[in-house]
Length: 451
Image (cartoon, rainbow, N blue to C red):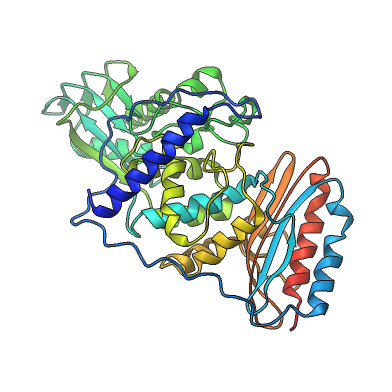
């Protein structure tokens, strides 16, 4: 273990101890979960050498060179008076290069951020992982192959890849084809689903039952098609076994018969690998997560972060690892991270903290990739349908957030006067549905400034 990993593991252990001390119940009726034991799991990646020392901490936020122009302040205050901000609690912080924070409205009020939580996950993951790290799904054998017969089980080992599908080039079907290419046509044992890389919790602590599978599939290290292929109770309770049934069907389609049933288990030490598929690099997964606001990717990457930090593949260990990874960014982290996606109502963070995190990201080696991964207003991802024909169109890069009871938007833009700006706006309350044009209007007012 490298010095950086040891230090990170210590920070994670401290954070987890604090988490256990306050208990696991949430104000939204979330389920309390006992802390699971770390699962046995294969290595995430093979690294020939320890990681290099982390980059130098980011500089302090620069002081304003001059006061914000009165016209800009008036425009922002006017936008803040939009009727869409009535009936909601607003936390907003807007910063412009040279002027500093030009608007602070409830900036230190912690609110559930919805999917802006994925900014936290993305930044932590990019801090933890190397650019070429990836997640690998494997098939292993527990016995010898004699002729075309496997005398043992085929174990489908989940590697935490959220992009695995049933069919296509990166799929269970591709794995089955590889097994057939190894000359196997009959398996005398069973197909075993191994999801031991992560814990068996199907949800993060603060989720509500109705959110699955409508907004997110049941969690598992062996995820296929976002684990939303079925909605029956049996699949929601044991998705890995259901996915292994699909793998068995793929084997049959490639001319491989299996005599035994599909079961759950773990690959024994020394099991031989006969097939594998590797995900795209982790930074590419992060970019896709930000563009599509993908809940499954956010949650599996959070659990993988726990493993990367030397702890368990659990949501609490993962959020603790992500928090520790962001420690060098010079931003005091006082918010609550209850999951990786933002579905939990227990997530809490202020707009000022979000804005400072975004600003700190610009000085990191991965900062440009993070910014480029955000949706572009009027052009891509969850912002493709917003800001058309405004000063924000093709300019704003930001993460959206929508959850019952709240909306959020946080990101970057260049003002009409050529100044770089960073902003975060979070609203919660009964009037949240009407707040979208108000949020967009505030951001457009900032983008339109010509000073």
